[in-house]
Image 1 (cartoon, rainbow, N blue to C red):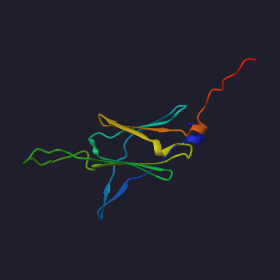
Image 2 (cartoon, one colour; image 1 turned 90 degrees about the horizontal axis):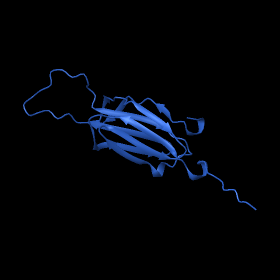
Image 3 (spheres, rainbow, N blue to C red; image 1 turned 90 degrees about the vertical axis):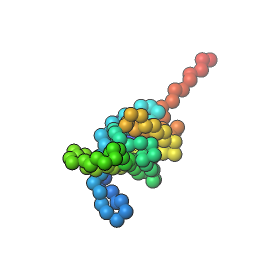
Image 4 (tube, helix red, strand yellow; image 1 turned 120 degrees about the vertical axis):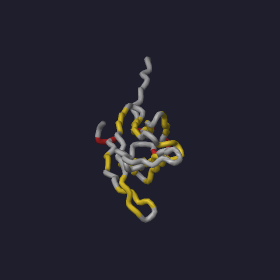
Length: 131
């Protein structure tokens, strides 16, 4: 990615929930750029659509998701490798991106965001006339 479309990652490990701090996991993210915009893919296993929050405020993108572990009735977990049940990542977006036209999809725990570039910064082909 070049400087114009660079998405700088900022740590977001503590989130405020009610009046207590809870630890948040940073989901692994891949970011790709093409002529049309940016594609961001975040691994967020266990997060359903209704527990996913994507928010843009000015040039800040916040992606959060809560995991809900379904425990059968009458069973209690004795040990858990994953204690945090929240994913959170925060990104700074280039002003060359159309944040009002973000397309989001969630499939098998992978969140995919498509953030298009503004039309005036996209490459365009110029037709050459003969004569």
